[in-house]
Amino acid sequence: MPQLRQDLVTQRWVAIATERAKRPSSFSRAAAVPVPPAAQCPFCVGHEAMTPPEVMAFRVPGTEPNTPGWEVRVVPNLYPAFGPADLEPVISHVGPYTTMTGVGVHEVLISSPSHGDDFAQLPVSHIEKVVRAYIARYDAHRQNPAIRYILIINNHGKEAGASLEHPHSQLFGIPLVPSAVCEELDGVRRYRAESGRCVYCDIVTAEREAGERVIQENDWFLVYAPFASRTPFEASILPKWHAARFETMTVEQQKAFASTLHDLTARLYHGLNDPPFNFYIHTAPPHGDAEPDYHWHLELLPKLAIAAGFELGTGVMINVATPESAAEYLRNVDLSAPAPAVSAPGVH
Ligand SMILES: [Zn+2]
Ligand SMILES: [Zn+2]
Ligand SMILES: [Zn+2]
Image 1 (cartoon, protein in one colour):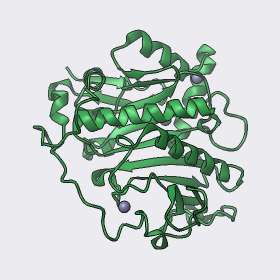
Image 2: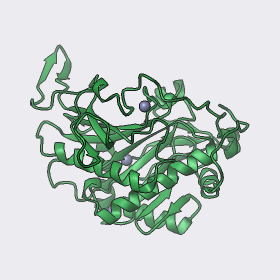
Image 3: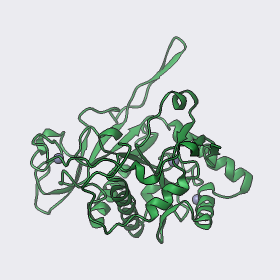
């Protein structure tokens, strides 16, 4: 019988439709044809003039801004969804409706000069620089009173919404705290009021005890398939220490986070033949010290299912793979195997 599962934090329901379950390996994608660097890729080395001027870069000493020599490069989005950042949001009313000016920031963090290498291929030492750039850009905007939330996201693969294939992340600074974060803030407060404890810290303990949804673990992080996973192979990276803010990580924790992100994306790359995915980092809102109860984390959702009428009409996702079988599959991926080259039998 299909099982409905409730997320402990958000109280959102998902349906685990075991009757429709497929073998985890059947989610493996057909091999993508490697695409050579596009001559017109604005994120490739030598094309720096195709983007707005950089706001930050890690560079080889002695190289000039907006010229080659960079390792990680941050530029404003050419087509920003939010901006500018130097105005207060203005709320107004149109009949019964409310509007707000979409002030804020929208930046692109180009992962590396390499057109083809993403987190699964980049050396951990390089991913550490990407993480440092995330934190530096977070810190650059967190004092801005107009920005009520800062979200860092990554779209990997065209089906996951990456309009340019050159690996990059995006930072959005927006004039409101989004409902997905409000739900989690409500959840941590409710749980703490009932139990006196942090719900995410309790999840760390419960998942380590159960073991069946654990994908990977190291000194600092637990990587697991959430109990109420919304999509096949959903994964979370959860700090094992209680911390509300991503951006307060020590250098040692940043190194561990880079390594954890590399490991998780490499498991997807090798195990499922480079599936498209989205990940985002949930950290406490920048203003007010009111959120010591929050516990930051990264959520990653492979794009292996399409939200259709039922999902849109109910907000309840139907997941055709159990988190337990997905975690077992990802735990056992052979990371030393050569990169997937040929098509595995699959649904895509
Ligand atoms: Zn490129
Ligand atoms: Zn906690
Ligand atoms: Zn979250």
